[in-house]
Amino acid sequence: MIKTGNLRSGLPARPLPDEVVDLLVEHPGLRIERIVSTGQATPEGQWYDQDSDELVLVVDGTARLSIEGESEERELGEGDWILLPAHCRHRVTWTRAEPPTVWLAIHFR
Image (cartoon, rainbow, N blue to C red; front, side, top):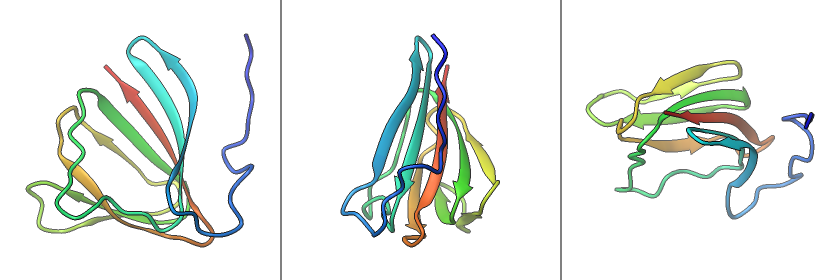
């Protein structure tokens, strides 16, 4: 089955209380999501520690990530991507709220 879409369509006109995660593709060992952030950040003291590798691309907007063991936050802008190996503890410390920050997240094993 052929599917099409646009990562920039259907974006919220104002900040929302929670991120929006749209599942685009899911197969064994592969999950592709569009994530729309409007100012959200990972709660203080909480870290993502995933069983799969994750490639993250910022399509629109700006965000900052903290990687455990690194002293400086990483800022990602439009077109920037980062590959986070499985169990690389990380957290989102800031996202641009308006217009929204749009991510493409590819989780794979």
